[in-house]
Image (cartoon, rainbow, N blue to C red; front, side):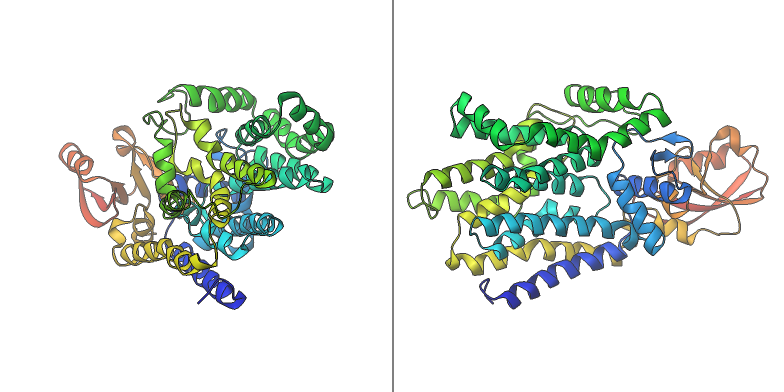
Length: 466
């Protein structure tokens, strides 16, 4: 098998994508991220409120813009309420990202097959492809905006406008962070390749800033205005809380929907090494090996190209180096640039290595998939509990339901605490809790609870009043 043969490449891509399709169609939505965003999408599809995403009935979700929710809710409308429906839009988004970055690779005379295989088989990219998260859409948005900028800079004016379409989509995907990531690539690139005043002159000449900003506002502005009008307070929480306090305050206490993370400063670079696996190790190896014989030359044009994709690749790490409230998936927007860098540093003699490395991540997913299928009790999801519960009697969660519990019960779970337990009218009910809480309930209340089945975090009990 070689990467010079189109059919070999298509067969390999089909194998990789099929493996992802199977896993995303069978495995349940995992707590907490996937199930949370899945439940938000379910609520949107159920209520037909396409302006305000809801965290729970009557509770608006101000944490993220709605593009990922629109995508998953549309999947539900088209294919029903199931894992495939809610994930397939995100796989299509990732495949679109591959198409855009491959177009840029072709423009530069790079091996499109190498670029596609490297991108899709990077650990974080493969995970985000078909996962219910915001990150795949942010990755697509940055890929569109930076591809548009680069091609527009070198003479194709329509791509300069397309760059602003990417920024507009990014504002709907995750907010102003798209502008920051875009700027952290473009501004250093201009300073690195041009004098200060020359860079400004060329930027104003080649990039239609005024009309571009109008494009961004036309795409994202209407929703932001409608969202604030529908639920006043959104702007303050989203722009100040999510984009300032979350960044500068580790363990930020104002999070309305969860707990802020508190990571060591600079750990984002370690996250990149893991998330870009196996290509992070491969590119380190290639850079060391080719230090004396640069396979792509040292022309001015090539210098500008390499500096552009390197800055694109590291822009998420630059942004989050001094932030503690981060996740490993934050490096994803830079991974398409890594695929371009790998393709820029390889030749036809590396094809077998590229093919072999591209199969590592799908193989890891296959092992994970098999383990999860045959060890359902270890799934980080309550789907199994909800399916097993007696549908003729009420289903309660002790104090706080999981997101997967809410999703798979279609919002029909109820909360139970010491006060509401006294008011239960049914003689029998399903209860999801951990073992310690149930033991305390049996001691303090006239009920009997019989263990039914368990997931990784919770247990299902059939309880009866005595």
